Length: 74
Ligand SMILES: [Zn+2]
Image (cartoon, rainbow, N blue to C red; front, side, top):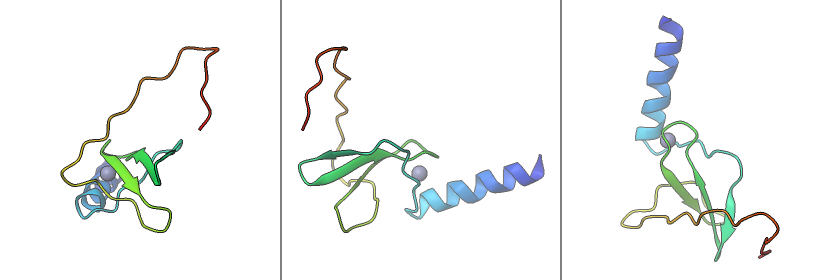
């Protein structure tokens, strides 16, 4: 569908200029929020007052979820 293709192109453009869309379930850790872009899958980070951006020169390491019954609370 042309409309959908146009929307996808727009979404890609938004991501390319840094307007990522964080997926739900952001994680708070050491003063930063971490998430992933719902559109392009890039790792995203933001401070409490900042906006989402892709961390430059850093890679977010996502820890695997802990097994059931042993949940640590930060
Ligand atoms: Zn994106």
